Length: 160
Ligand code: FES
Image (tube, rainbow, N blue to C red):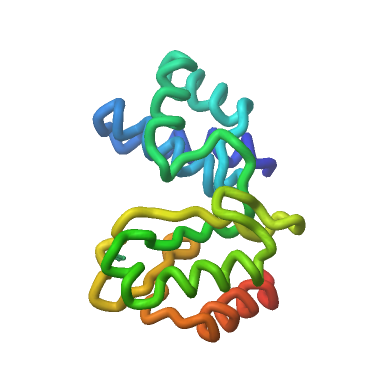
């Protein structure tokens, strides 16, 4: 099954839950991002619009309003590094610098191999174990430059 067919199938399951239309739309956007490397391409937006009977401009309104969604291509793994003050003061500044160096990108960019997109985020709610980052929704705390290298290597080495 290709990604669009899979998206259609997921949207049918979302519709079967009979939730509020706004919630349906957010879930469909989430499903699209899972299927299309963390972004919502035009064909996915069109599929969502058609199956949920929502105008395209409404789909794009939500897809561009929430920072968790993106309509531009992103990497397979989405890194969100907390840039809020509590993480910043316990070493976050140094760790994000290391991340940029080992990935070879600036914040907002995707690595050449398409594996990672580096983004920053405000507080992720885990200030007690800062500095903190999330990769694809998985949280990593008490980060040091060394720990970050290990984590990135583990993603590079695996077959996710
Ligand atoms: S300030 Fe970084 S997780 Fe709260």
